[in-house]
Amino acid sequence: MKYKPIVIIAGEPNSVFIEIFLKIIKKNKFKSPLVLICSKKILFKQAKFLKEKILINQIGKNRINLKNCNLKKINLIDVDYNQSKAFQKISSNSNKYINDSFDLGLKIMKSGISNKLINGPISKEKFLSNQYIGITEYLAQKSKIKNFAMIIFNKELSVSPIITHEPLKYVVKKINKLKIIKKIKIIDKFWKSYFKKKAKIAITGLNPHCESIDKFNEDKKIILPAVKSLKKSKINIEGPLSADTIFTKTNRKRYNLIVGMYHDQVLTPIKTLFEYDAINLTVGLPFIRVSPDHGPNENMMGKRKSNTKSLLNCIRFLDY
Image (cartoon, rainbow, N blue to C red):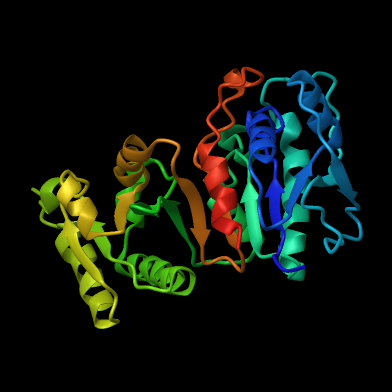
């Protein structure tokens, strides 16, 4: 097989994912075969509701062999899930199904048959509960990886938060020099290996205008020393820079990656700028993991109005 398969975990069964996926494969062709990990029953029920004809090439989940993948069919690994209706509400009833799906996907990654993984949207509230703060962290722990980073990627400008899905009140306690250095080194390494060039990185401060009325200024005591250390490692980085002006048009042209201290500090502006034209990328894992930059959006199920751009970008990103 010339191109390694792209393994796609459908994720939350009560979401717009299957509708979006079927739209994409109907209108686009890819070099890499697509392997969908999903309940066959759910796939066919939703396809029937949407009046979409589908052809599948079913792959056994006990002895997974992806050598006979078909570029013209959905290469399906069926995961057991009982669902009496086409659409239901998101609940913890899906947890075992989702976990089993991830286990199968990670089994394929570990085997080396593929190193390309996409997961559909997951309900963090219902699936992750209090055990994990996000799918990024869930996959890192499943893969036994401690050092990793989240990137929201767009070819014009990408962002990465040092602290991901933690409540804002915990952010200050969890920021430290070593964490900043480790995450940025992982990102820089990925940029060089995947894009064959060095990233042009800007890092924000934590406080407004990088100033603090407190005696301890995190920007001067934590972030600035981290930047100085990274510069000594020949990493192309500037900062700390004020978060309220870093996303101006002029600054966006100077950098291809902006690192922020916490989730919404950088994800709010990037989603405002590019909306669905971005993907969620985890670096530092033994494989490349991407996911659409949107949630399950169960209220839009069956309405044929969901935007396909983010999932399409995910597949194109791994179609090599």
